[in-house]
Image (tube, rainbow, N blue to C red; front, side, top):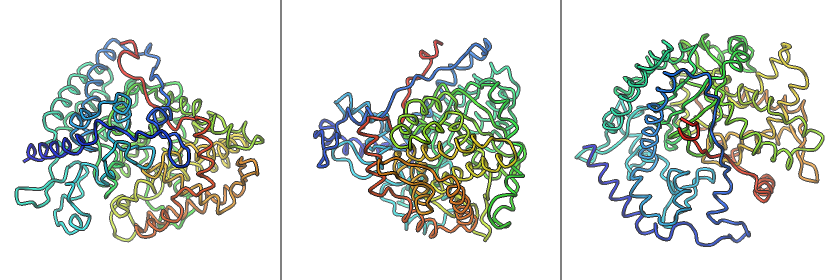
Length: 551
């Protein structure tokens, strides 16, 4: 039955895009507000960065291993196209304009990921909230009435059987040919792994792709300590499923460990249990104990593929997402240093020059940016994974709102952690001030990702909450100045609010909060328009691959 669904969707894609493909994007270059909406303007909002790294520390076997990983990553990219859109080639073949085609490749489809998923190809309607994970004619009500025990499966597509009823098809069956090919390539890479931990992880990850059972490979990934190359691969994040937030998308990162920077960061992960107990919320919302084997490291990323390459580019990761693995063992937090530096230099500093008050502009530093991003990832390990009232995992209880609230939690608790570490003497007062003000500048960077991004929505919530609490002022010149004391108070109260909503599994409460605070108000929009007028990039895209690395 799998091939029938693929063929039928492909035919639909051809029919849909054939009518609009030759015309491409909107032919007009400006809208009624005088804004340049040309395809050139859209592409110019993204700045290209070469993904390079120092490969001197790689062994001969490491270099032999990398080509297999690049091939696997490209397969993950193909799978993400299927999950997001389906019918990739049928869609792209209808686009004759090379610039529009390039923009479609960047966005993995005809919708602008950094502009609230608005279509930029004529004749294309609203992006389906369930992407291609669910039948296009399926309603939320039909899914909720469906009694299948597998309906919330992280690693499956939902399709219809011969009778028109819903059924799940595991990824390893639905994508069998590509999954088998990717697994075989990972097995080949494992033969060249000098590090025993990496060798074990790769072997188990290949098996996980074949079975959709990832827990053993997740544990093996956490056990790796001395590897130079890292390979994050598989169906991982659920951002693309905006209907329910259940289904994960395929992606891959290829990473080179910076062992010197990683050694500097190691001590912070050990502080998690103490920080968990100090969270500003009732004891029942922090009763869980995070796994004690968490790891924190710095890496240069040399390849992005699939979900992580779509929309805003990831600059740090906290994995695995499996709550049971997190509770038993912990997580690893990977800071992607070269990508982070590119965003700081090309985006954060120009934003600070335009929007941060001159008296605080010198407080926007790369070290503070690195710290706020790093502790964002560490903070994913804080709080609660299971609701306190029998509603199951927080992720399941909060459904489509789970990702945005979790990103909001990590942001605000990251700042909370920095404050607590300052109180313990780990940071100076200048370090703390730098982090608060850089955090504010970072809101302007991330809020530009729009409501279609979980990170963008989380930043809208935080900006409006901070505004209500007086955490910053806006000068007549349109510059923002942080009130450090009031920001600390706002951070504390927002932390408590989010942790309570998660612990209660309060879906309606989160919906209400996001409806009230998760939006861009006119004054902020005007300031963001200033950034656009100054041609400050919204995000980065990559020139990446074997040739860029000189392999």
